[in-house]
Length: 532
Image 1: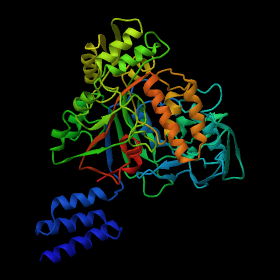
Image 2: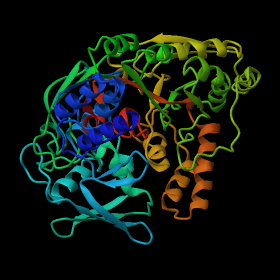
Image 3: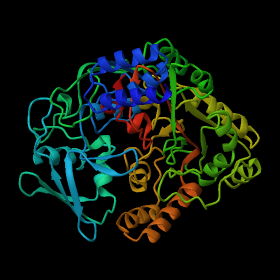
Image 4: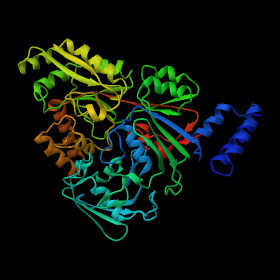
């Protein structure tokens, strides 16, 4: 009897997964087997969850979203905006869950021997939401949107090395760089560089791109309603018929919404209650390690943070191990005041770890001519999961070093527009990037729109350019090691921990292999997940 049940179950599963059996008939057949004791209900649910299904309505709640948000690819700055932009538009390239760079709107690419000339083949069978067919002109306009003196885009420094773009026929784009860049195609995976129709020497991002979903309703800071693009060009994606993307910044409220079934998916699970949440048989906890890290960036162009000894004192005044234990509940590792964590190819694991040392902190205060220090540190729940508790923990450890940190509790709404990079010291986070170059260029290069420490260092800038063009892996690794040390010793960021991404879903949705290059399945969950 056992052998027969295995055969029946396997035949049923194979028929369903190869498309020869409808979802309705699979459920009916498996239910009959379950009633006979031959196929468990949990097995049925596992098969349904692991097999893409077209149709249905998916509700996702995220910890981000402000009333000031837009979906302008030049100004997106929080996780919800990134998810939304990937939902309405496509990029030239895409990073797969295993880290490989995959084609998207670019079907292929190749480089010259010195990595200064890149040739991209652009698909010719893609339609924008407005009915227009994708052309080379649209690609060039979308890239140029982040270039030029007038551009305020956070992606501008990444494109600073582009000397020229030109079309070579209807489907070939040639990009000349001012210097070699071995990882250049990885940049086009980013949401900044989503492709939109060209319009009036710019782009029409408000009309949507060529992505899997169209926006039906957008209430910034509250919700975005999506409907599937019926003409989506990419096979095997865009499964749900409609999707709601909700802003719920309070972690307890997000968890409650998932438990009650108000939503199907949440991000940034409250780590203090994640174990309890995981005991619910209808909820699955999803966790993975990637480049996500939590930070306290100091404006190095503002006193007292313009003093290197003050910055060093603040770095020695934080107990990183305690923070990982109490804020991350062990779901992460300590950071070393630079953005290159263990998930990166060139992570320098051998450099000395900065440790909590109140005496060294006092020494550097004395070097700065201070006997003590009082500073404000802004925070909010929307900064990162546990940000308010983290700042209070930092406050407690810093007292032993003669440093008084005033905890400034800011409003969740408007935190990223009114506090981050506006207040001299504030809690923040970085989802990270596909490459070291993109992370360094976007967050730490001189004048970058998202250089939230306003730090500028000639040696760092020199290494940034050299490492980008270096094709020798060993030499390149050494350069990136030197840059990590420079940031640790002289930079303006306190980066105490790299956090695992922790999400949760209920049985109403399913997904394939998850990407942890960024939270929420590489920020591409809208087109990858389905209603089970």
